[in-house]
Length: 176
Image (cartoon, helix red, strand yellow):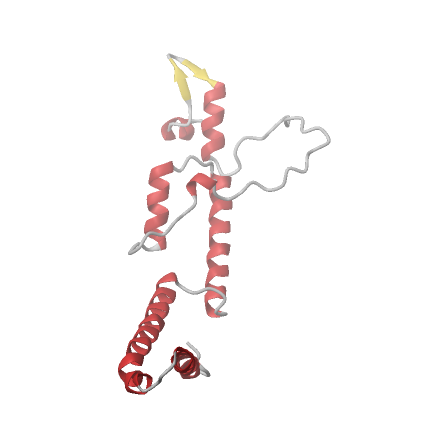
């Protein structure tokens, strides 16, 4: 009892001990909490399933330039860590399991970083843009000699198909 009092787990109202408030604090901070004597009646629907690890409003979103640890700290500061020891252990174990799953998925190349995708798409768009912008200077003399709209249309179609095949052929067999 003295340790509980020193830790601030006991709630006093004057010289009287508030048992209910003290029990809540003890349940919050002790590893095993308080022994539960009765359970709430769940009726025939006792299969409620496991509670989600993180509330939808507190999902961790890693912002640009922020590490996972910094994001976690930011979320905990914002929502407060109002869990008892058992809840905290459950959250920690789930977090560690999810982190290991993410690392496995990264190594198995099932997920990629958004920054890597953005960079790769940007490089590809730059290649397509450069190739398309080079078409007029390369093929203008040939197109200039054509006489009918149908000839020009066929020539442009062939040039575009050739450019697209070239862009596709350049990336075949390359794994990133």
